[in-house]
Image 1 (tube, rainbow, N blue to C red):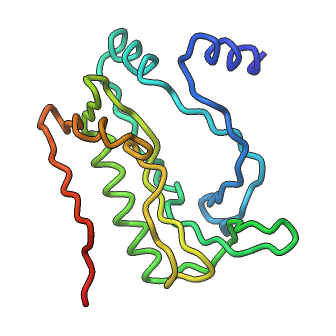
Image 2 (image 1 turned 180 degrees about the vertical axis):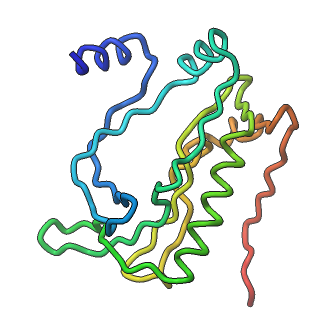
Length: 171
């Protein structure tokens, strides 16, 4: 029955692609672990606009046990980088706390792109091999927009400006 609902939501273009990907999960009082083949569904702006119209502004905040720090290591068997469990430290706790606050702020911000309300995932930092490599922010609500669309981004109806530097590094 759940798959029928998902199929209907997809056919009505209320959700985006369902992807199978490994996810790092941390349950309270238990060590973090990687769960493979987790289905990921993303609501479209059409669904969010319908929900807001019918139920008012929805505030979606990250769950306190959500994991926003991912460490990946190369797996020679699959020839891919895969999420792995890691021991927490003061630094990962600091990063996790900052990301939680950022994601909570973004959840309470109305984001418009091309005059459509955008709702998306929460930012995650992904590191490679150890915490000195990588650390880019991924999976945020504004990931994947074209250059032409980025020009129309507004936060709480305030226009934004994207600064584009061809070269910005020390010499």
